[in-house]
Image (cartoon, rainbow over all chains, first blue to last red; front, side):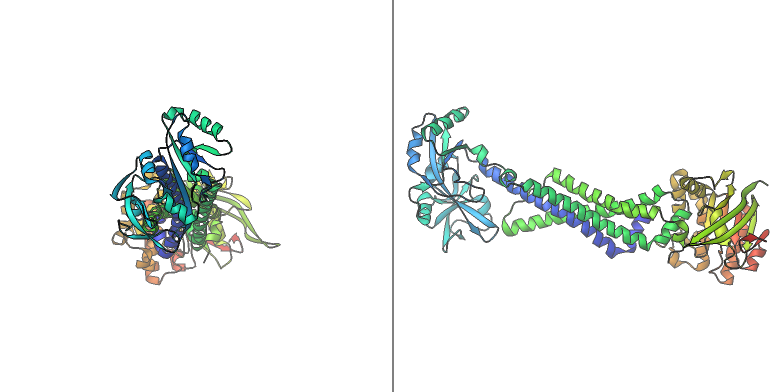
Length: 363
Length: 223
C-alpha cells in the first residue's frame, strides 16, 4: 500500500515497534489488572453462591477480607437449632495463613457431614478429612496437579494429604476437619462462625431477628451481604483501578506524543513540501493523527494478545483467575486510541503551523 | 492571451532581530497564459522571495498578487493554501520527493491533496508519466531513480493537477548537463503541448535561452 502513513511507519521500523509496544503495555496493564480483579471477584462470588446457608452467626469483628479469628463458642450450635425457623446449623473455622504463592490463602475447618449436607457438596473422589493431617480440596485446586493421595503444603511445618476432592466449589478451596483445626489453633470448642440454614428462605429476615433477640451481643448477617465482591471488600480498589486506567492512558499518550514529535522533527521538510503542494492544516493534522491511530491500533492488538498470554501464563503458574470483560476491553481500546490521538495532537498542531519556507529549507 | 498572473509593486521586508532587510523593493510583473519565463539574477537579488510570494508561501509587506483572477494577498492563510492547491505547482532544486513513496505514489499524493475525483485520475497520471518518459519508473522509489528522473517525477507531480502556473526554483541546479537538458526539454514540451504557464528561476543561461522571456533581477528590483 503506497500510503504516506504506512510507508512512514515502515521507514523507521524500530521506532514504530517501540511506539506500538508502549501503547500495548498500557493496554495490557489495564486488561491484566481489571481481569484479575474481575476474575477473583467472580471466583469469590461463585464459591460464595454455593453456600446455601442464608445466615452467618458470629462474633463482631471475627471476619475480615483476609483475617479471621476463632472466638465463637460451638455451644451456640445446639442453641441455634432451637430457634424457630432454623433448619440446620454447622460451625466453621476460617483460618487465613501466609502463602508463598500470592500472599494469603485460607483453609476451612468444618464438620464435614453437616457442612456438606447443608451446602449440597459431595465428594467426587476419596473421603472426608478425618486425620489431623488430611484435607479435602475443590476441583480447581485439584486440577493443579494435586490428585487424591498427594501431599500439599497448607500451613505450619508439615504436609497435608489430599484425602478427597469435592464439588461444587464453596468457600475455601481446602477444608479439614473442625476438630483438627481447633487442635492446631488451640481453640477447642471454638469456631469463627456458624452457618444457619432456614426452613423457608423468605423467612430469613424474621429468623435473623429471632437469633439476634435471643443472643444479643453477637453478629447476625446474611451470607449474601458478607460474601460481597472484592471491589466492595477492599476499600479503594475501584479508585485504584480508575487511577491505574488513567495512568495507562497517560503512558499511551506520552509514548505516542514522543514518537510523533520525533517523527515531525525528522520530517520537517516533508511537511514543508506538503504545504507547498497546498495541503491544508486539517490535512496535515489528519495525516499525523492517522499515523498515531495506526500505531495505537497496532498497540491495541499487541496489548490484547500480551494480556491474554500473560493472563494464561500467570494462571498456569499461580492459579490466579483472570476474567477479561468486554467493558474493560472497550475501555482499554478507547484508552489506547484516545491516548494516541490526544498524544499526537500537539505535535500535529505544531506541524500544521510550521512556516512552509522555513520547513522547506530544513536540513 | 489572458493575463494569468499579475503582481503589483511587491515589497518584502524581513525582520532579522532589530534590523529590517528588504528582499523585494517594488516588483511588478504580468504573466500571460502559456508563457515560459526565466527569472535570473545574482544570489540575494530576491528571486526566491518573489517566487515564494507568487506561490503564496509568503505574504508581501506591500503590494498585490492576482493569480487566475484570485487575489492572493487579500486571502487568509487557509484561502492562500487553497489557491496554491488548485492553481500552483512547485518544482524545487532539490526535487523534494517523498522518499518513502514510489513515483506513482508521489503523484497520487498530489492528487489526494488536490481532492480531485476522490484523489484518483489514472489517465491523467499515465499521460503525464508517458510524456515525461517515466512510464517504466512508476513503481520505483526516489532513491532508485537518477537525479534527472527524480526531477521529472517532481515535474509530473507539479502538473498532474493541471495548475494554472508552475513555479520552478532552479530545477536544473542539482543536475548534470545531460539531465538538465532533458528536464528543460520536458518543460518546453509541457509549455508547447499543454500551454502550461511556467516561471522558472535559473542561473543557467542555456535554460534561460529555452524560455520565451527572461526577467533580470538585481537588489530586489526587476531591471
